[in-house]
Image 1 (cartoon, helix red, strand yellow):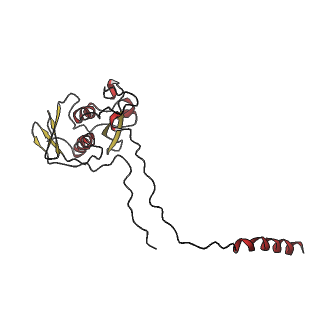
Image 2 (cartoon, helix red, strand yellow):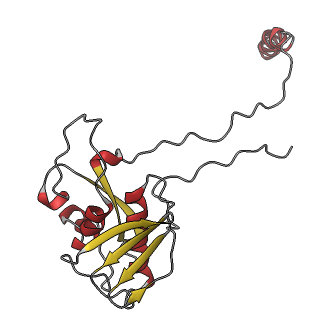
Image 3 (tube, one colour):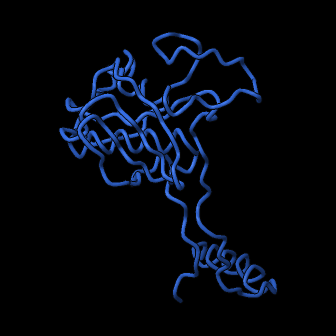
Amino acid sequence: MRARLRAATALAALLPLTACGIQETDVIEAGGGATVDVLPARQVRMLLFFLSPDGQPIPSPRILDGDAEAGGQRVPAGSTEATPPSVEDTVAALLSGPIPPERHAGLGNDPSLPGPRTPVTVTVSDGTLVLDLAASVDKLTERAERQLVCTAAYAQSAAGGAPVTLRGTDGTRAPARCDLRPGPEPATTGTAPR
């Protein structure tokens, strides 16, 4: 008898909930997930493309704090008027190789990159960055070229979209664009099929 009484009580408790008048609605889409730029501001960092332990070029932001090993540029804390480091300084930092924390993370340079004291000059011609290196470009591997192109492109602008021409003592490479992105890919918009 008690089992019937409990069942009747549970059913009686559920009845008001089923008849509360709430109408069923369709699924409402709210868009893709939010993305956040986690890179420090361009005024206080260099974005260098080193090789990961598996040999792939990856972005590595280097915070500038006046330390000679970190680029040697003093940036006042909270400064909004500081300018990003020049393309020349950024490429020179790449050629100097990783600093201890970057080396500890397993980052490095392709052996075919020019040495740390290689003079670098940059000009812009018809929207293309021309990177002049006082070294051979003919011996650069594809990985080394990607390191240089991506580092120069992202030093030039936050979007990293400028084509880069490498010119050396032995010739000129065709303009190339960086095919790597330092942050999350932009979310695509659209509706899901029903």
